[in-house]
Length: 245
Image (cartoon, helix red, strand yellow):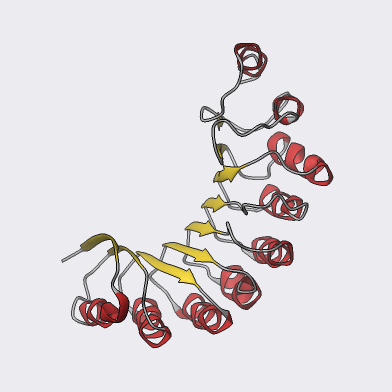
């Protein structure tokens, strides 16, 4: 068996059954399960089982709910040798515990990271982790629901990342003014990114300065592919942007 896909289910304390599945399937490559309702003990056992699995490449780790969960996940990230694609959602105050694991892991190439509920201080830790990471190839970042100025630090970190090729910014809203220079720089001169996708928080969300920022950043951009198709731009705005790429 190489793949298990369970969708989104309320596993609760039955998460131990998934952990048992991992221990009896050394050839498993993909575990696609979005779970909720698990106790901390079961969650810890699951994370350790995935992290120590000899072959699994892709796994969903659910929501890192608190500092204890973050410490377990950090250990998994530091120890795993086979995982190349992970997905996890972070809650406030958990990113600080994950900095070392996210920064130093050399096997993970694709990271789907949800930060919709984190606070501004958490973004500083995310930026630090990305600044130190030397292996990521693809990052999908579900941005915070609140518009923090510190997103500029994350923009700076991914813009100079040495190996990152594909970046998706989901739940995107126009950044605060203090983050505009970092956003424009990310668009115009990323070190290694050639594919960028912006997915709006909602198509009808107002982004009054976004077209101007896109024009500034994309005028002489090194990006090869830019996908902004999800935004509800006017025909005039589409014409202005269409002339750039």
